Image 1 (cartoon, rainbow, N blue to C red):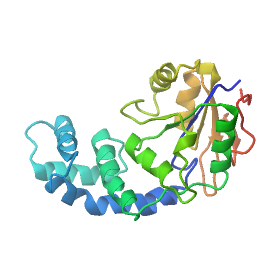
Image 2: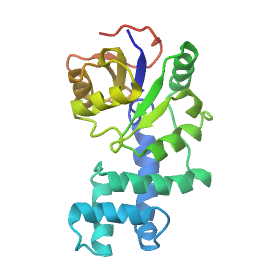
Image 3: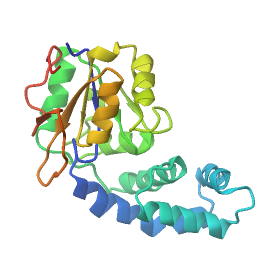
Image 4: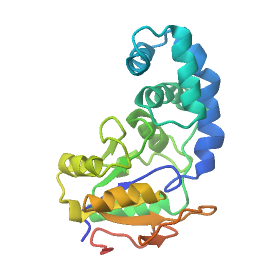
Length: 228
């Protein structure tokens, strides 16, 4: 039985292209200027990068590292934090908006109607997640969500310990949590932690989901959906 739903974003509720073709280029164009202009929040980002590189790293090293991480789609927390800060400006200025598959808003509304807590677990920062859902092309979807986890608050998405940590945080038994993602490695980690794990295959998805159950949209899931 499902007592809580946890959703991935990229490739699951939102098209990969919305992130890789819009958000990522927007952020990359601004990474260096944000760091060098010492905008609010960037001192913590710089400190985080230096903590990983070594205290002797100068600002040029930090900028170069952030750009390298960005180009490699690395999941390091300082980069994700900086992305969120940059994207916040873009969303507030009306230059960016969240994009979702058509089945997502109705599914979120149905879970909300049934009283099923719905959480987001993404490598993107919690700030970026809230902006994505609150300023979307389909309107403000944030009210359908109970809360958010990123790699700072939840942990690495391919480690079972992260899912156990999240289950404890949301106060649900592992076996009662439904996780939806387009990543087999994430689904494997969730299932190892005792969660119910279902793959979501969107157009263009080439993931080998192995023995995981797979759906192509979110229609039909409800508070008492049995998937195990």
